[in-house]
Image (cartoon, rainbow, N blue to C red; front, side, top):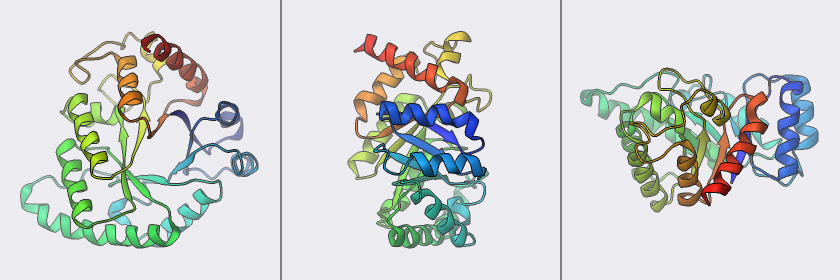
Length: 269
């Protein structure tokens, strides 16, 4: 099901989106970055018992997979904050910068990440709160290698968040190649979460699909060779029906974006 993402920076900014998520009974993702007291007053008053799927995005600049052995206390604090509003899982990044890509470093990288992942598994198992690792600065080969490592370690609390815009910006693979790999992940038992936004391939713009139309970016390209963006969303809807799919767009665009997407998807069928 398609849902919304907010960050807890300002109650005035997020209140209409929170209300829409509850009224429409859609998933809601909350980014744990700012800790604004009024925003948290709203979240604590509205979300527990709201009956909607909730997940959080922890502060990946502080608590990414690469730093978990040094940040276990912060990881526990972020998960406690997430669970206080009913979050069933959280998202983070592999690292706040690219990891080494040379083959000569792969064994040492695997050994280091194994230590970090063991911390993740221990904490998340204890708190019963999975972490989904989002694709950022790397192509598909790095994430294929990373989840092969997770599979070999037989970890149960590590899953994947696929970011549609990040894959266009930082990988050379086409979207059909990514989707093929995502389907293979689900066949292995991994769960998926989706971040949906667009860009023109120059920087991580987090464009809403209303903006895509306004800027004339709604066309198939080398990344989406078979589909325009609305056909892409239909593919994700149909191929990954059990996964939450949240629009990671500006809050002032969120409601119009959802209305436009629903209209286009109804037309596609």
